Length: 116
Image 1 (spheres, rainbow, N blue to C red):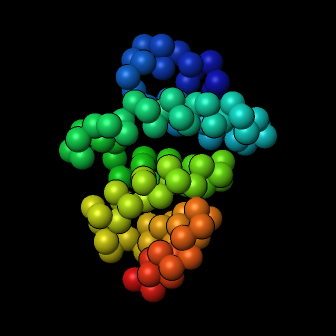
Image 2: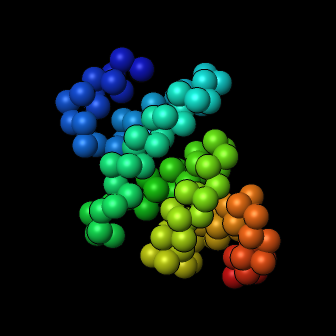
């Protein structure tokens, strides 16, 4: 699996998906630092793109979940805020928003997100 993800990334090094999957794989192997490096590389490939050129909603939601698990709370807030702005009716995203804000030290923002 790992070799296939690295091969996929080498074929198209502008594709963030293999890096996201590698991050998830590393996390399941309890290699947190390696997971964080892969996740940061994935995020850097798309974070500055215009909204219509960013990866899918589900991809970015998974990114936010991994950011939270890896304790990258401020970046998670940025990703989740974009998701909420795009689709306000997705309950899981509001929960992620509340959790990201709470873990980032914004308890009032977490309350607003939770009650939304």
